[in-house]
Length: 249
Image (cartoon, rainbow, N blue to C red; front, side):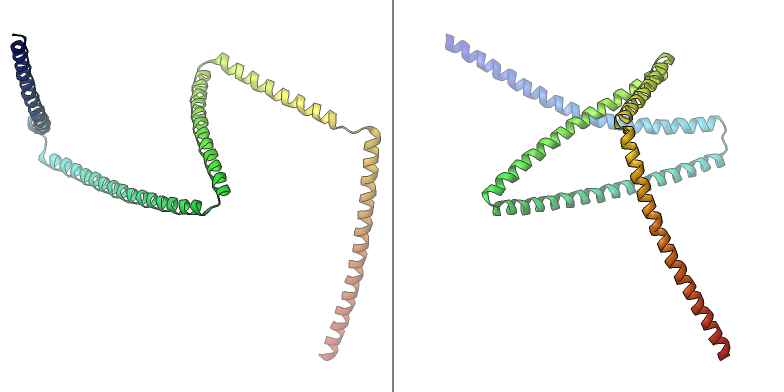
């Protein structure tokens, strides 16, 4: 009796499964039909909008010349848009081909790099793997820091917008900037005071500078005397050449 009950229950479940499969198949067919009908409805809505526009034109007694002019303008605009879309599509194809070529180059370079690594000594391979791991770690850290920077930039923009709408906060920012400027001047004055020479050191430095300047002046005077002598010599030579030229003439 239990076996018969189980058999009956199993048959019942099988019938329900078959019904479910049929319902699912019917649902899928209905879904496809609904998609097709949605497309048809969208197309009919476009046609209806065109018909409504024609009815409005007829009801308002619009001049046919104006309608033709609007049609020509729309046609030119549509042609221009179509050309723009074609250009974008062509550029996209070109970029995709470039990307594919770059990816192929990268793969080839990887193969070459793998061959080079295989030819390395064991020690160099270990160093390479360590450097590669360090590079990947730094890249991940860079990504994290870039995300943090982007977050801080967004926060900064929000704070700037908030400050722009609050006179009190604007005044606080100005006071903070002034305080920062005064602190920098204080630190600069402290540094200058630390670097300031004693009177004896300053006197020695000035004496040394005067001595160096005197030596440089004496050297320049000697050079100036030599230049003057050479100038006088060349003047005499030019004068003699002029006299010889006059005699020859």
